[in-house]
Image (cartoon, rainbow, N blue to C red; front, top):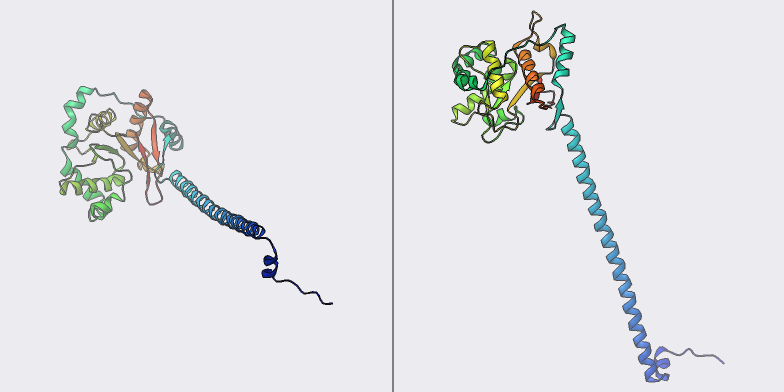
Length: 279
């Protein structure tokens, strides 16, 4: 005798109606549970992808931040503490110079009396630069003001007229930049000693007045910037004596040690012959 397999319809037809309802309900419950698990699994995968993407973006930001930090420490924008006294002692030792020259300190009253004297020789000074550093001066004067600004790090803003000290060859681009601003009837952002009757006493008085914010530079975060040659030998003349810039450094060092100020240094890239001190 051959057994016949009942079809689903026959099986359900032989079952009480209440049992059929129960089976349908169980099937519906199973389907809902299955679909719920599938949906949760998909959501979990989506969340994992979002988390991975978020972590990837965070890592990219951290990486960029670290690269920026390293770039700054190499000389981008980072201002680090600088020991001018130690620098000068090393320079004196290498060049067999005994010590810095010592000058008498001017008074605040003298600053007010001789303030105008510091800028009386603009035309003479510009002519001197044309004669001594003509090529460099014309090179920077031929640039637009935006191009000039690319060659001068950390130009002061707002009402600051920052005093700049340095060798003539390094000051050339600052002279050109000031001249361009004058021609455009713009405010001059830098103050450079340009007196008709230069002497050492006037030079020292200028630095003293600048240090104490008596030259319209009191609103500057750093009233003075000093262009410090990367080659120490540029601070010594052919006779082995101190150039004016070295004497200026000595005087600034004296003022800084007297008032416990901290000098900052901006280490520039290879396109500059000097680093920049901010006082």
